[in-house]
Length: 253
Image (cartoon, rainbow, N blue to C red; front, side, top):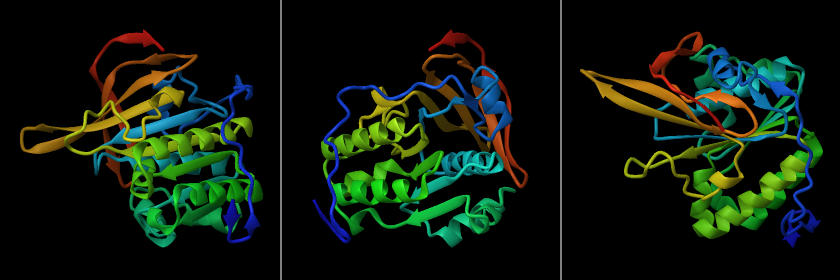
């Protein structure tokens, strides 16, 4: 397809499903969440979905994930479509996550643009190019729900399927953020990619008395024993504090 830098050729999909499956585990950047994921965090090269309504802390979890990757000496690439890099850095400093040093060290790169800037195919070309150039071990898309403004839900799903396949083939651990609407069921993603996701973390808030409290549960995490507890958490000036269970059960997958 034509692009700003000539012609790019992208695979339609990875029908072979022959991407690697690592046994290595990496931290989510939040000790309490690592504990819920069998005490070891995500699988290397897996796809992770963090979904929830506005203000539930999705970007804060993403910032902890990026910080943890950089602390391991790994490159992390963020595709943002709602905030500028400067705004992201400022906002994350307020919760005790300073990402600026990682940018200076060349370990973190933030690519920010509005979804309407390109069509979905051009977004995919842009992402392929940046991933190939930067060669990250971790990647964040914040949020994927905005892609529906550049095409239909079906087109966004097809584009994200191709992106996830591309990243899995490169063993890039990928965290996708999905903003759900107040009227949507929380266990739904507008782009319809839940079946492609290895680990799904759902954030919500509930009114208790005169306050609203944030909650988290791991809806699924393939290939590992994980907690199905619903846990309350707080976002503090020292990061995310993931507390005790609100409801207790256990499940696998």
